[in-house]
Length: 345
Image (cartoon, rainbow, N blue to C red; front, side, top):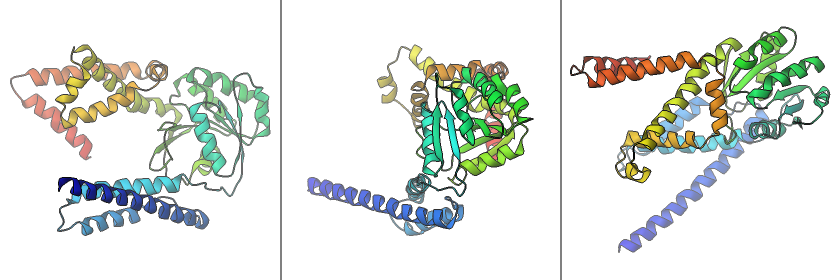
């Protein structure tokens, strides 16, 4: 009897997967129509209505509302990711050169722009940098340590082209970008995701103002329409934000798994007693531990704000330590409530 029921569940699972695939296929058809009509990939009102529909469909059923919403959001994300990944042909075709186009992010942005109908070429180490003269847009996608030199080389040979980098830090070459931006169409962007991202759907892209508004408008036009969230800021603000968003978040995870590694307890043993919160932390820890150590070192080492954030982190850890060891729970209670208020604002 139990084998029969398990077989029934297996058949239901197969049917669910088939329906999910069919749903994504239908979403792609909608995406193609959106492209033809010039409509945005993401429609938050439609998404809200779909979620509400799932709540209605599960009323009075064994499936709770929260689970229905989770399933719905996964399906919405799959659908919009599929739509965002569709080629979106730009009305204004550009000749784009990616300096460092054979790197992971260089390949990613090349594929994105090629899919939009732009002509995309690449210049790499050892190539003649003068080749960029034949292009309308030049994207710098090289290691952090090389960006400044590449920008200076481009400054000597470029005139009217749009120039921007996609680096995760700006401190080492902020002055160069500002100086170039005062004379040329130069800005700086930071995609807040890696090359494994299937699309830019609901992902953040920082656009840094280096003094030329035309550059900002052109880069948004070039990369827009894929469901991303643009955030503008002055180039001088970027690394302060990154010292928290990247530097602090990386540091917390590295410190966390370093403590675990030094504990003398195996990962398997930790998993056997893991709580929900611990598992969530471990998921992120695993992702961080698998990243490029040199890149993460540069993000910590080259950011001019790192030292001050490390000081803040050290003080915060000491405050939490003191509050947790104090016989009076008032300090600990205050820290927890302040955190909640911060997230509620």
